[in-house]
Figure 1 (cartoon, rainbow over the protein chains, first blue to last red):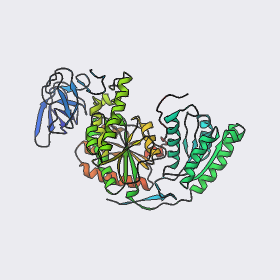
Figure 2: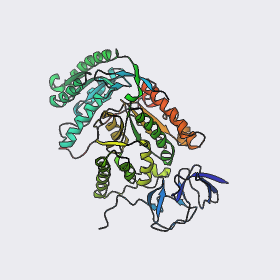
Figure 3: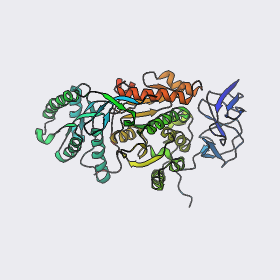
Length: 96
Length: 387
């Protein structure tokens, strides 16, 4: 089975699912220039994000070509990216 | 693309898309009386506030500015304003009178402090105002007279993909035709403020955008508040939005691609010159939409992901979603179904033309679901503590 997702900018490292995916589904990602396939490692709901590359803690998560936060743990290609492994980098008390 | 609509030309030159008579309680004491009067006057719009003489400084000023703003909205033909005591009510009534609208003012002090007397006098005066207002007729108006505001509520990832860019395309068309557009929800510029600042008309406007976001961000930090769980809220998170940056990047798409001409305070009307403006204001829909309607917006373009029933009672509020599940469920809430764009069966450009036509239809009198179901409410935001 395959599910569809959309990439909003070539710089993005996550894609948004247009249909829900089950673990093991090949997610076909419409990247405008070409088509990417990523195997979903776990169930991912419609509208939620899938990682297109392996990410390390602290890596910037990019959607719309812009930073939407930081990975809080290692995220494998094909994993669900959400509040359990992605944090905002804003509205936090200054480090100084 | 159509270039005209049928609207009500007011004596002050503004154009209404509705012909409302307001029954407004300008103080907390007289809300129930206003409710009684309004319920006796079929089709009148009720405005109440819980606040009064305890408000200080900026808040006291905002209260009058916002209430007067509702009363002077182009969609309003006549206003009955009531209150506990004189000065507050008089200030609002005088502002309304300056626009040439019909206005009557009544206070409890002149009714021997008797709410029943106030009710009786209010019904009689209000009835006369409504009859006179009903003499207004629609005439053909160029689309450049449109002033729309954009809001999102209960957003999900489909909002940033479909509904917001769709509204953005319509807003660009309205602005290009010489109209005005306004959006706010300052906290939802956070993470995208550099993109808005890059579109600012000049450096001062860019600075205003960045400073407005920083003030809200610092307020959250000072309150020890984690934005996660608040904005994005639980409904946003369940639907797949993970951070405020992600939500903001989708949210600002409803402003299209036009230059940002300026940043206004909540409930302040932007300059009459055409263009896109921002309002520095809270994001919660009732406060945010209230700010736009006080600023004179005739129509609200309200995008949602999973659904949101809140609408203004003064400015027809067009609900737009691209979420296929919400569109299948909410037939009598969503005025525009953009799920075919989400499913990639229809291009954004084609859907934008359809939505633009709907905006002109609604401007000409077609009712929104929110109007039919009487979901409308118009409230004033608060800034700080009260005495």
